[in-house]
Image (cartoon, rainbow, N blue to C red):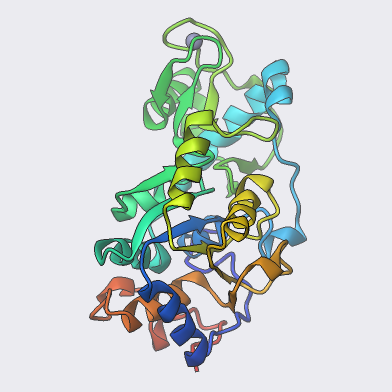
Length: 318
Ligand SMILES: [Zn+2]
């Protein structure tokens, strides 16, 4: 199982120069920053992304809502894999990037955070003002009656209904949506959990699937936050999904300067950013947060940042 920190990062990460960090710090120092985070913010927590430098080499087909809703066998396979993958997803810990953003919020520099991630790691890190644009895997919902159930509670129900699955400890490779690639067949034997409220068999993960829209209230609140900010900081997103790209477009329309921190990928709309920094989120954010005085010690990334703590196959900041 690939949960070791940095396991989903390329072996050679670009490292931002001190001059680039200075420019990010200047951007932050103006305050009233809105942050938009994507999967690249969580890869250092061991959660893979869909389009990062490593995972794009082994593309998966994202699950669409329509297929999920219509196909009982597909739902069995989904929940079987989700059941197996849940423990490693649940146990992922916030990384240096999440904690640096919390520090920037505490320093009244970041005033709101929007995330495309569904892992709940910003909340776990202690971030206060944030919106989950694509929902969260920490809950499941019933599309038929609207019932919401905590994912941990659902896991217990699924374990009771599938005792042999709970015992056998299948091997699984975690996927970005908390799904897992499970070895072997027999997935369609998996017993679904009925909705505790209406008894239906269409419980879905509490996330916006492909083919669904970001809830209206969330979209409105996020666009209001954008209008109210002085700068947009995009962290770890390739912006290939329109729901994220729209904020960069809007920022440009409203003449709000935008800064991108991402591991060097061709990013859509790159020309809309006044500043682009090629590097891993944790490293860039911690160094920039330190530069603006939001972090006053090395404590924040105790196990993940700093010269000697990078995995041995990556290049430490020079
Ligand atoms: Zn229901």
